[in-house]
Image 1: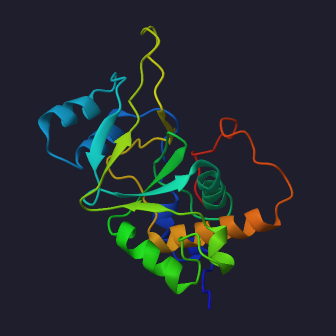
Image 2: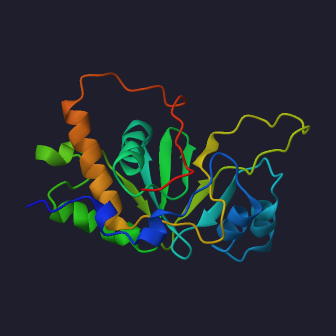
Image 3: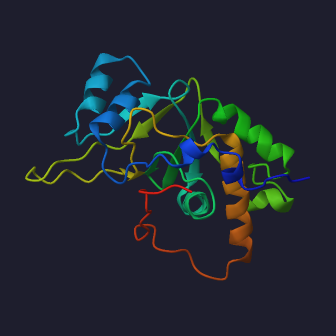
Length: 212
């Protein structure tokens, strides 16, 4: 029943060639994050490119977030950058991976997973290969990593949140539910046939200067 082909074939070339940020949040990226809400204090904290404090932002307007277990999220990210169109911003937070997606993904992705019989519910059959994915949309909020420091600043206090792929533009490309469905299914299939132990979560570096 599955129809999950390579989404890179259906993504517009202009979208696939937009380079994403690396580990550092830029002022343009901070402005995009701040556009998700209108609360003055939060806006100031997000826009401050020297902030070392995580911020909480609402989902559903500028972005939705798919929240995956760290190892499975890393496998999804490997698929997106290895065989797919790349990813939007991605953050790690307390053993979970937050993949930023287009608004509406939080409602659509669970439906697609169920339709493709890969429901993220921990049930029997092949759905068991995909761990529960938490989809944050309108009415939800997520914690985003701090912007970081500039050279010469005192070392910041350790934080459970960090950017893996930080936004560096006011209009970052975001994957939709179909792209994330494809990545989740590919990650699940790869995990079932893999005979190797998980890689060190801190050792992977993604070349964000290119897109497929």
